Length: 254
Image 1 (tube, rainbow, N blue to C red):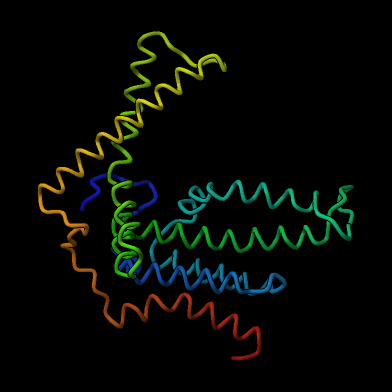
Image 2: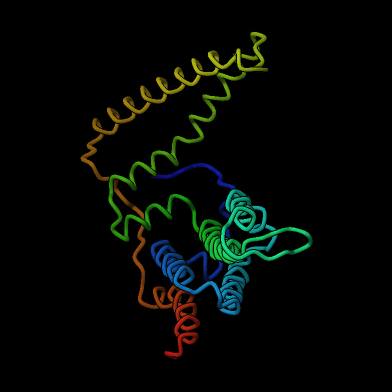
């Protein structure tokens, strides 16, 4: 099932990272995230090494730092929340530049920022080196619930269609002189949202009937070979493996 759309998160390329099967990259990112979450917040140097590992992956995939930074905007709500914790936290407090900050809040803010940032960067690199459709197919290869994978596939396929429908409805409203300025216009926007929902639901019914008429039995055919060789699993496992080595080394097991 092809997407047929350009996605701003994906950066086409022909590097070692791009060529890895999607299920390998998904498993690698998940393993890396688990190691990062399991790392005690006091181990600053460990987080620095994790960041260096991601920098190596970005260099191998030829993903510029600016590309990653622009797509980390999704982390802004977490940053705002983390920055507020030292001010509203309880317990022992310290004074910094005339501001009274909670010690426990500072630790919590650092913990959230460090781990969330590493997780977001890893996710951005995954999305930058893997087409969205392939990510979903990789999730299917990892035996995620097929129904959830198919729902996500249809969402990916028809998201642009629904957005285009919404834009046409907005143009139609504005061509008739409507401009939303205050709360009095909320009912009009609500009716437009209801109409968009009905149109989307009816489109889904038509698509489902069309699929049934073509032999759909609950599973989408996969015509692309996504099998992964042992060497590819080994290459993908180097990221979580190196992160795990850092963690075990910190505990004194290595």
